[in-house]
Image (cartoon, rainbow, N blue to C red):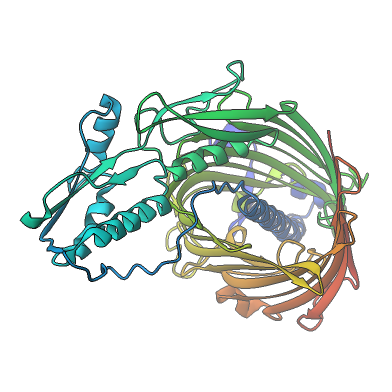
Length: 613
């Protein structure tokens, strides 16, 4: 809604105000048809106050639920992202102590240099010159080799020592992914005190599809191209960017090129249909606006041939009481890779309504929210066991609450935010750790509304500062020959700012601390929760039994107003895919610890069921 339309003068609607509450004239007149001015004002105020409290809590709860669901989806996306580890020579296991064996004869080495021999192709020689560049601002990718060789200066080196140095340097290059780069010992006189080693750079001669009729391109997925040093880490990144498209599997072969040092990269792609349609139903909604939620999602895989992803979704409550309450929403998602970069845009629209029993007559409380989010991820380092990425995101959040169609100005939100973060994925054998550390702050971009005077001291601010940590550890193991998996998820939020409820950290739902129905949660500016799961496969049926124990606590100024700050709960559930395209998850649980008189069902049961074609 534009600011112009929200102006009472432009809309032709006369308004009355009480504190921060502003209501259109029509609603309080419908709420109570009182002709005495004092009585009419009193009734209007009473009804308005009830409506405001109900509308505020409903919209805040819906937004907290949406964010918890979004955070869980991002967590699952990060955990299950494709992982490509191309085979390479195993380390020899020999200790590299930086010393060469004592032998005779030997020669004291005062200087060690690397060069690229002549007679190679122009492309290989150019790549070698770039890789060995000593430019301090833009050092070559093989400068680590020069630094490594410094440890052998001043040592007495003989024939065996030369072989040890070359073997160790070659192993280091293999470890860093330069599997086709070779190190040789040219003929020379070591009595001068100078040792020269020749490097034959291994480069990418070309990248192509095995089937030339394959739709699309590989170019934007791979952070390398013809003429660049062949680095397995670059090839792994390109394969992962292509494998993230659900309907395609990608394999790769390295084929020797026409001249020494050159290698062709041949990509084989297998695809199924380029789209999928999924439908799901679950009972994760709020009791006040519809527990049963139905979703339909259409995904287009690789629509532009750029390993891109596009999907649109629509959701609606499925309780069948739209005359009394309900929700509906729509979302869109698009993501495209560009080498080490990934660009993602999302947008969503959400609406809810519920009928509230007033003191004199019923009225309808409703609200809408819209979000737009843009995210950029950049992979800045990877090796055989870890990935490290930086992320930057910015977006906008808009919300509005209504009572019988009349907007509540105090509930109007038009805010923008920015976030920077570090994503880390680490493999410890078969175990996997995924972590994201982020800093988020409110910004005045994209026409965001300004703070009220004095905001941030004793009242919430739109220009907040929030730090978050999201970490998941997954460890497979065996007990009595039974394959098991333990997983632990930790999420924490800290903020020095006074926040609006939409930015609160909440616990007490299936996406945070389980064992609670989610209709009432503990929320405050700061908090932490830990989820623990033990997964046990049910024979070879493809079904998994899981046990979960969770706990969490909230902190901050708002926590002082709560009846308690801690929750703990447990669940037992079963999930799996009994037939192709059908997925389910059912669970039952309850609280282990909760504040006195905390409203919650016992036991708490839930389900989700989805179909995909």
